[in-house]
Image (cartoon, one colour):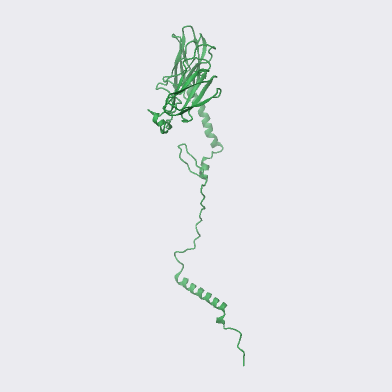
Length: 332
């Protein structure tokens, strides 16, 4: 009697079953794609490269003269970078050539001071501006400020680089004797520097060294008066009430001590501190009259303007006779 075999039929082997199933799937798939082709909605294109998002990415912005951004990134840096060699040297050379030409034009149009004797014994005259000054800039902050907008009336105030009349009369020029004898003359009345409509009035003033002058707040809002001096001791104080007046003085001669309001920084004024009392500031017509009392003699008279510069004239004062001087200053 024979023994039954230990081997199992091939179909019952699990490994063979799996292989058969895989072969069947492969055959079915091949037949399907042979008749239908690849799906039109699915293609094997490479995925688009996504740029990582970086927050607060640094940018370089080039601002043109008109204030408009010219771009950012490397292209803007290249545009803003100065050229090298001849291209870079050309603008500098042109500017250097323009300065002598401008100076020559100014000297050609500005005449030397004209001096004549006056029968009234006074030293007086006029300062005229030659040339067309640049347009002054409106100070819009005066009106946009909540408090100053309430107290400022009339036209919008402007900067006061060149304040000239229609016929050229130049305001805010310091005219002074440089070599007056010590002790001669008496100081004029102490000047008043007022704050009205959120502006200093007058813009330029002069005072004798050691002489007291007054600073008044005519506005119903708080102002601050800060004096920036190089030779003298400065000061800084607040004026909170309308009508408040403070007296101050400077001990040493100094040209152009700046006064500024720290609350309203556009408020500027200048005070010249002088060593003798023979000085004046030109009015809106460009006219000036020096105080009396200068002894007979020969003197140097100076006209000094912050923008137009300085010019001097030699004058002679005799008994009962003064000097009349016509100054011309040029736009610079």
